[in-house]
Image (cartoon, rainbow, N blue to C red; front, side):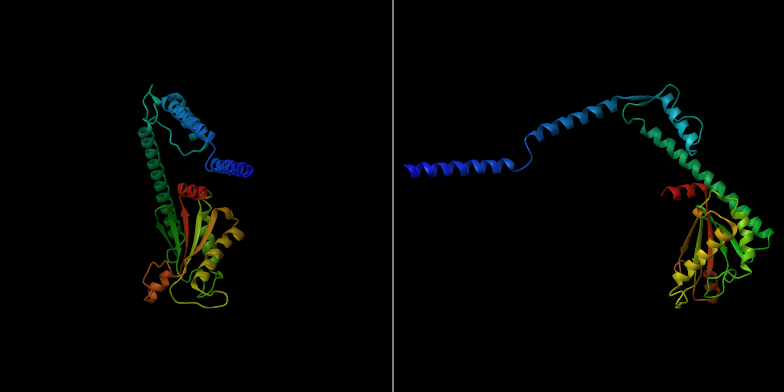
Length: 271
């Protein structure tokens, strides 16, 4: 009899232990109630938002404040008629999308006009200062490119500015100083003839060193803000002519200065 009672107690203990282990598995039961409550609250607030409205006058005031502080939103007539309201959930989103699309188009047009004037001024300045044989000015998508032709700034295989390059850089610097709010990129390029020296193991190092040399001259000698500048070395991998001819290789050996539009400059800063 005692043996049977002892055996029964062991069975009961094993049963309770098994039940405890089963309870421990999975999330606590109160999580179901908590999850339901959170879901209901979320649904409630979404419902409130969908039923809310914003007065058009307040919205226009918000847009005007952005225009005044940021300076990118163009003033003018509202895309929403007088007395109408923004709200009723998201049914006004097409109007907002149209507004910002038109604003972006206006900024693109303003940027293009800025670049055209910059390009025209550069071409005129280069011609007046007898630099047409040494520097080209071209209009790009978001920038104006000044290209220094082969041999104007550097000797072959070197990254030290030639003495006669100083006068050219100084003259171009007078124009660059007119754009203090524009980002300026200095790019070095080479032909595909390999270079293997201790100083320049490849054309990448040579092209980068040349771009840096020009940028540092403007910073150290003409007191430009280094935050305005960036440099890149492309080596032989961005040719503008055929490397199979001597004339083509000469065109590929170049240093370029790219002056970004103010709009593109602001976008680059905010990235």
